[in-house]
Image (cartoon, rainbow, N blue to C red):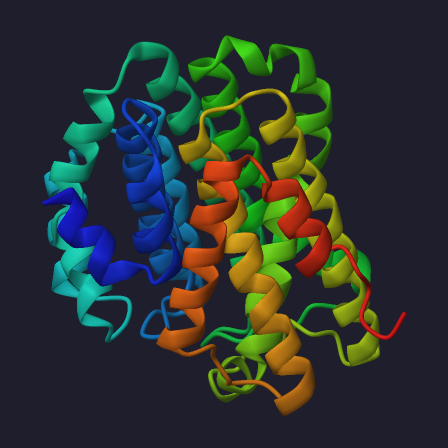
Length: 308
């Protein structure tokens, strides 16, 4: 059931999570679905601001064990007044009791990490939701505000994934400080690409994630620098001898993001890379993983700054 929900709620992670070996695959899969629940509450186009804030904080309390509500009660409440129209996300909310049970069945150390970071992102999302106008519409002010938002919705995810990787593979202990240093920037890179890609659709829904006072080129430049930091993160995993599945899991979204960023910069918001290009990227990455040449692939495709 969890794999089915993953297919219905994600394009990128439906490709990357199956690359992982167990137990990390299940841990990351459950964590993704919990974060996707939080994202769905934050994206709630059919709820007023105060409802978003309340539901995000209630989810955090539930995860931390400080709520008197059950997962079933939350799911019923969300079903009675759905936050948005997306069928896959509605199905995920209805299945929240099953997702919560899967989270409870994780090994204690992994469960604690997933719960802690999901609750953190819920509370951070609630702070931004509280700034919206009554019927929705968040406007970010400047680059610092944009970075803070990216941290709330994606940087924390990068930090959680890093801790799960370190928990699973003792060989990564030697590079733990470097991984932790760049974990949030990895998440920021992917989020900035999504914001640039979805700028037109977000504007229609009243969200202004690109601050009007900031030149679009500055945001593209920030995204590219973050992608370079993320490439260094992946390269360190390979050099440290991490399992090839973990290297592939981290490298694939980075390669897809770079290709998407190039396309958006050339053609404007709303464009996506096609299935054929995705397939070519996956095949090239698989070959590089087998040869232990992912760093070289990233150096060719991600690290060069366009126009330099």
